Image 1 (cartoon, one colour):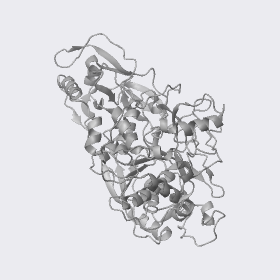
Image 2 (cartoon, rainbow, N blue to C red):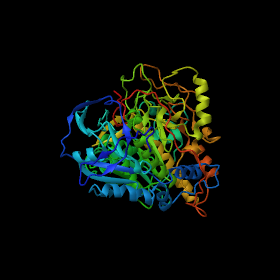
Image 3 (cartoon, one colour):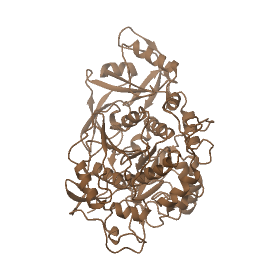
Length: 613
């Protein structure tokens, strides 16, 4: 993303090799050290920095147009997803861009490594002294106060004027993104409950015990999720894990024996990105995600993508690395669910990185992957409950504010099913509201009136899009029954529904669903969801947003009804033969950053868990 308001500086002589005079422009500048970080001192001139250079993509507008073209049920190209080569052709930098950036690096004796499938990301290793000279920067040490983690950043940097239309940004430079924080809020439940044969609640077919704890049987009954094994060739579901998370196959077998005795043989594969672990004792988040994908999406091939700490993407902790890993595959997974996220405040002052990552999700969507994220567990105060925003603007989460993915909130209770109070939702301060949301969101804003006026960006991308149960999910960890609550339970649940819908579509010779939102927000689709009209998501010293009839920024359109969704998607799906992967894109506006008066600052990327004691 090209930063606005570029400032022209005077001639500057590089201190490396022979002097090179070039007219510079400020690429990025922050006014002060962001909230949560503190200045430590000068960085050692000899310390090596791993900097990533984002090159301007040659046709990002065309990618967005193509994504909507293959994802809109009203389009003739609906379901005709793009090939790997077609997507890469749109996001690859132009030959001129590559030549100019490589020449600039070369004359400064720097060799770059390409680190993305399309070639739009480069990586360089340079000492602080060389980085300062190359970028007219002042890299110093800062600490993230909460964890005492040290980072090396600059408050401003510049690039040659000749590169301003070719070099999107350098990262990490002025980006202050808190590290992902590990937490495992759980409660013990003793032995695993067995599949219920006891009394049922007033909600037809739902075991009464589901009002106190959620199992696969509860979700199958609540949402009409089929128990029959999936059979389609080519179906797939991926679960992402970060920071040492791993699921254990023994724990899964025990879980299935107790709670899915009709499907006890479910399993998963584990693959490593950035040296992620692929075996070991089960951890909470990974166990939850795997047990409620394998345990619901019966017989759908499931892969746990374990992202380690040897990241190419710095503070993003593997968020971009995993997407580049999947984009490099000839056949990426048809569904991807992630239960981690960030406070969007970490990106508001430097939105270029968020936009680039969002576009990467769009690349997956254009190729036919449904990308789902847990919306967060802080209500309107970010990924986790916090009083830091009391009296200030609401704090949306990222990546849920990205318009190219599906954000999943949480509900609780059976009679009635209501919004979970921790369910993060709101309006992005970076991404403009996409056209597919206009009718639903405007209807909500009309009902909201002056409530929370001035505390959120009314024209921002609104989230979540959908929801499922998210409270008191029973998991097996090391043979011990434990309970977990949070939108981290909801995203894998909805992902399983999508995977089973894909099974039906593939068996009928249809395309997989891909990017879901244009379908979810299309006329008549709301009837395929259980509308949630009670509850709210308090935070920042307020009651947050109320759930109402129709879409709302707590539960989206509500929870899924598989049978109704199946009728919807089979009525609008198209065959896989013909012009698949040949979308003719017409010009549409690119996702725009909307004006934001959000206070500068940030909060860490977190697993979306909620403590339930």
